[in-house]
Each structure stands twice: as structure tokens, then as C-alpha cells.
Amino acid sequence: MSYVTGFLIPVKIENKAAYIASARQSWPLFQKYGALEQVETWGEDIPEGETTSFPRAVKREPGEAVVFSWLRWPDRATADKCFEQMMSDPDFDGMDMPFDGKRMMWAGFDPVFEGK
Image (cartoon, rainbow, N blue to C red; front, side):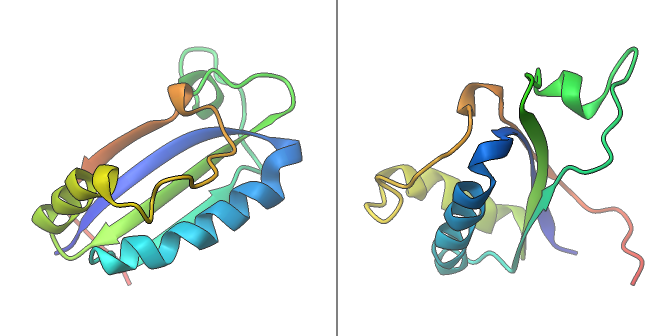
């Protein structure tokens, strides 16, 4: 099975077009490092939880949406290599990040079941 890097990101609603443009710009770079798939989803039906929730997780502020996205890799080694090398790759320099990176979360996941 593959490996997945998942992200939760707070994005100002007014920056939606810029976020989509940034995602499109990053896809060829992730492909270069071996990513198989990139999916970006814009929050539509995201309830505020009493204990936990997506908005609480990213400390969503008024006027922000929650973005849930993921990259699928052939394996963890490929993902790890990408994230190690991308910091020194000039193609990633100067990329627009139209969101508060301090409140972005990411993590790697080993799929244990895939229904298709």
C-alpha cells in the first residue's frame, strides 16, 4: 500500500483563489519527488465541536475556512525524501503560501484499508 501525508490548514476565505493557484503550482513539484496524487478540499460543512473539531484543531478565526488535503506517495521513503529535499530545492523558494503556516498541521499515515 501507499503512504499518505495529510494536512489541515486555515485559509482566509478571501484567499481561496490564491490557495488553489498555490496548490496547482505545487503539484508538479510534488510529482517531481514521486507523489502519486494531491487532493485539496475546501471546507463546506464543518461544525464547531464542543470538545474537538477541525475548526478547533487549526484555531480557525472569523473569515477563515478549513482546508483538508493530502498527498499520496508510493511509500514513506519517497515522502520523507521529498520533505528533506524540498527545503533546499529552489523550485519551492518563493512559493506563495496564502495561509497561516503556524496553524497548519500535517502528519504521515500508513493506510490500513482502502475501499475502491
